[in-house]
Image (cartoon, rainbow, N blue to C red; front, side):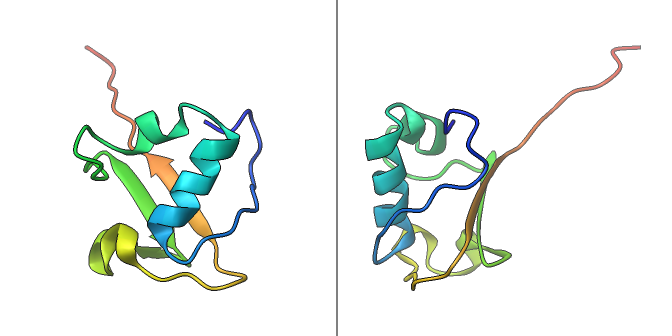
Length: 81
């Protein structure tokens, strides 16, 4: 998603602007975190300072300098047995 960089520093006033800034630096990132309507699908979990953004104001949630945003795609699997 971010060329194997665990941490990326970008600027933005809200979660959506931060995600857009990451997309500007890493083209294709937005395709991984947004659906066609530019909503974050349920299989992508985004946390702002350990709080899920769906419990806040979604991508409109305000951010300030020093906040940490974590983007975690859900994984599925099983033994198949």
